[in-house]
Amino acid sequence: MKNTITDLNNHLFATLERLNSEEINPDAMKVEIEKAKAISGIAKDITSNYRLALDAQIAIAEYGIKEEPKLFGLNEKNKIPNIAAIK
Image (tube, rainbow, N blue to C red; front, side):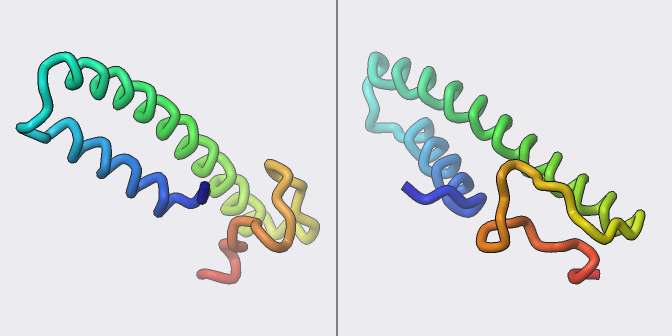
């Protein structure tokens, strides 16, 4: 399983497509709706975590902090890009 924002976006659109299917029967639709609610809740949690990490990186860049704190167990390989380098 991949774990990127792009993958999350793809899952959300796949869920939307299933919900929009005219071929699905009412019982299966009830199951899809429950799954969609669960997926939506998890997606909100994931995006909230990314937002927190991004806000921390912005604060680090704005205040000129030289040594970045360890956030969410990120390491050099999979860390969120340094905002200062992007500006």
